[in-house]
Length: 129
Image 1: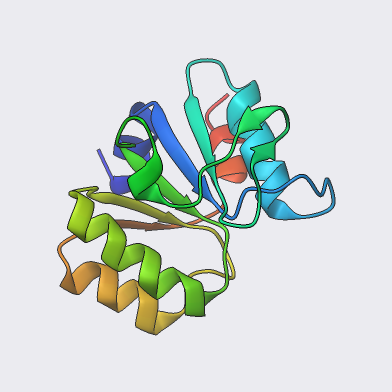
Image 2: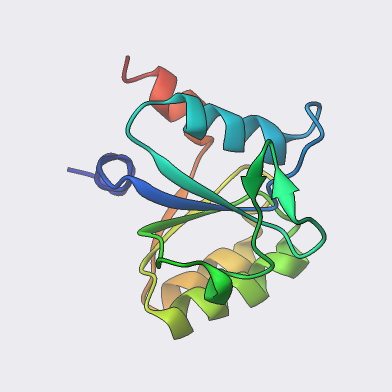
């Protein structure tokens, strides 16, 4: 089983960069995971208190439960900080959406011992239906 399949088996996710703008991928991905039965997904965005009617958290550390997978929908400059936070919190699985997966951030994640996927989660889930 590859990293993509392993991560899709896990159901407790956090979407970093989730937002309420239906045109942006932070919203599209959060909604897509919510709509896929079985996923328990939390939005994380320090600029918001609510995303699509769900309580939004300012950081991974504020989540009531530690996610099994962190999905990044943020610019690479933000991703580096998130990857370090994942390592500190013991979160092993990081899913980089296209655009968040700059080489430096991905290599940092790997250096920190994290499992990495670089793909669009919406495409991967649709391919499995």
